[in-house]
Length: 193
Image (cartoon, rainbow, N blue to C red):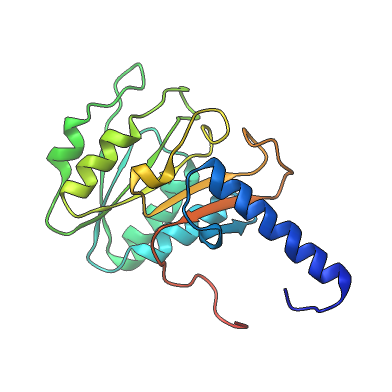
């Protein structure tokens, strides 16, 4: 959107059209809350690093992809973010009461997958969202395996962020990621506008 020539204007229209379609598909009320990233890993890093600060507590699960785990472990080391993980049983299922048990007064976020790339199991995101909200925690959803395959009403979840790749269930090109933003993260990069 920096150029005023016809090619730049057409590219801007194409990008905004894609944002509008994604907003409709995932019930995101505003197209300008659909952000593009290089992939789901970058989208998750923007959300996780932009939300968790020194002394915060976060809850995740044993079912997570490295795109969630590695940023969390780095924040544990560098920002003293405390982590707890809801265990999965031998079939890859979680006990939702564990989310309740792990909540603390300083729990800032629950970060979890919608569908596990390890087992294929779907987590009950609405139930997890309800638990997080009752405790004043924000929810970050990794919808990498489920987006485009399973209905996802992002507005109804009340998630702070929902991250997904373009190339999996959405059948888009490689090298594309989407972050639905319902909260304002700290910037990942600085410069420009």
